[in-house]
Image (cartoon, rainbow, N blue to C red; front, side, top):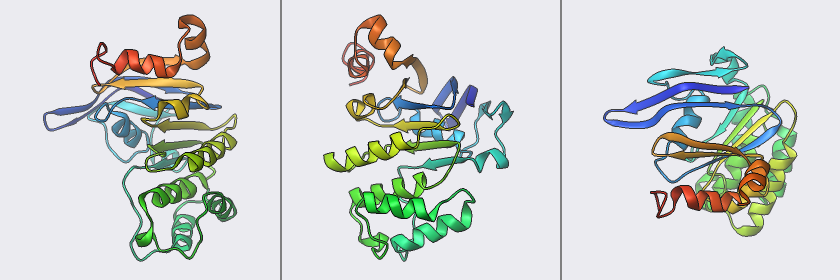
Length: 234
């Protein structure tokens, strides 16, 4: 279980995450939704142990997040983080050196699915190819938590289908999958829960089947309610 209790992050005069309490349990796919600046990335980075909260606390399996629990969390950021001299094969070796749960076999299977070859240089990759590489190397880890921050940015429609298939295949009773994206329609087909962030705060947390049955609307419709003209954000 991954949980934040009243977690807050302040940068100078800006509050990036504001007293967010959230509990994620294994066996499900969670979609974290909201416009830019709503706090999604900052919450994920605190959950990954990359950013220290200003106040509040992050917990993993009921214990405060520490170096041991961080080893069991895989996080894909929006920023590129490979050295320019690297080839795709070097990226795999780099991860294999750092993470005990990294599977080179799984990495090569994902590369094949993403239509990437090991000899490609990372400096020559388009934004879409780089996005696919980041997804492949992150999801080649056998982690208890996999967090993907905007994984579909720059990805064409057919490649999105391959990525969503790969995500669904990683679902297990012991694993939490958390994905943030502006492409709400894509996540609606695979997610079990939707987390709605707005202006640094958690504004709604819904099971998708319950949302459809109780309100008779889709996640896309709910997104429009919260972030549309009447909801505040465009």
